[in-house]
Length: 363
Image 1 (tube, rainbow, N blue to C red):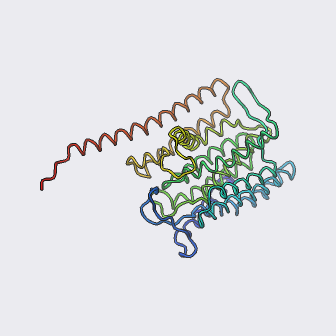
Image 2 (cartoon, rainbow, N blue to C red):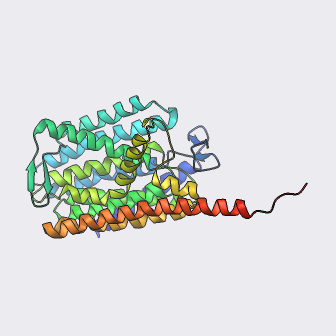
Image 3 (tube, one colour):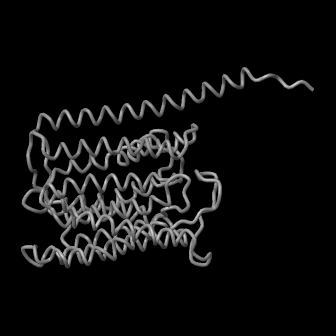
């Protein structure tokens, strides 16, 4: 009942704040004006992710205070206090970018600052659990590097994938729910409640962003959600009496990680400049080929839910079953990639056939 209340309250706060932002005075909000890379055709308010941030910042301190009596000592609460500062920093970086469009270097330095604050609070990779190998202890300096790369990398990946109506909000909710199940079943009560809170906030935002969107998430939301999910993943897999396998988290977050990684490698092989804007993510290619935002988002919801289910199952399976789960997940992602290529080719053939059969114009 308590966890359901957290989910519901976060959803209500995010829904109300996002709804207000969608109709806020013009001087307050920022509009996303369409350009050659846009998937929308009319100016639309952004910064809707502030609703998610507001729900999190309002509820999380109260949640920590409520759960404090059941904690073994004051250390977890202190860590969450430091973490909350890093969450505010990453949200501020996204908000500034939404308002003033800062350069990629300044943007990354802000993300790096948030990651360093998290490290200062004790958030660091210390171990990895691999099938048939067991737990591998990581040297401190390697853990620092991996933590920075993971926090900044996944927040950027999530930001890259926020490009069509309903995609990031819905997938963020699925990721949060999947992570909540892993957290709660491995004894991470506070992280589980926080993940449910984030899921509720994403759902409240999604009510205004599902196609056709009334407001966009903006960098303030996408960077924040990606960073918080990544931060929770570090804690879940490197703390407590029963740390979860990090591979399970990678599976839960697998749809966005795969799309972003596949696209980066594809652009690198084609000799493209990776830092330049583009429209070649798999989800963007489906939209360009003719699918609606609603259809593409629902496809990613299904893909993300299947992978999240695999991540949850991986957490409790033996090594042989884990290998089967990994192979099945790889097959699922490969099948999805082939589907994108097939759909593009089919649409191109249909277009050429239409041009060939079109009656000639007689003067």
